[in-house]
Image (cartoon, rainbow, N blue to C red; front, side, top):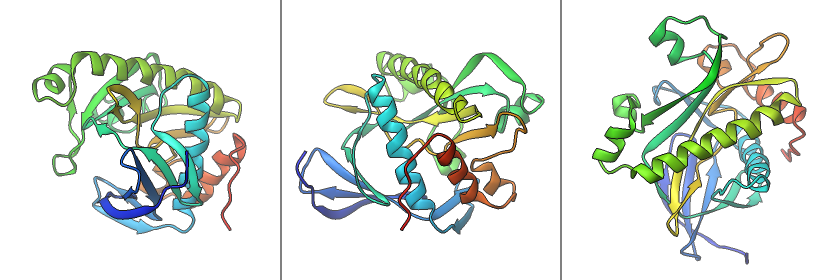
Length: 242
């Protein structure tokens, strides 16, 4: 595609800002250094985070696209900026869990790290004020968040992403514990949107089970971005942090 010009701020989320462009079909995502947890109740600035997540996401989206997953990602624009397709987003998160962690452990009293076979699939309604509550497919349809066919397609793609990325991270001696994805519509097609970075998944070292994801921030473990960079190094993400 030809060069696009950043224009007006459309939306500012917890970690990214979205800008319109001179192309009505494309937006620019700016990945900021803001880091939040607990539905935005804790926010800090972590140096290099925006650039690491932007370039990590670009690498993952390109690998997924090569494997046949339709995504909104178009191209890297700079260290912390990317061009993406302008989609109508579904206000739900699709979550796959390969091992027990986080809210699943708290809800069901499971042992952290328990292998889940088959992996679980969950839906959550995106609303910080409500704490992103867990919902089901019936609720999503009733309230017009997505149709049955759209949810089925998003679920199918989520499991395909799981298979692709489990193998990718395994090559870096990492366990993909769980992750969340967001989907939208572009010209009527369900596509993967938002981002895939250590902010939205759990990644553990295969041998030691050391956490190398956002749980380092949530749990006060320190070296948050260093953990992200270690994951990037292991799966050969070419980072440009100058």
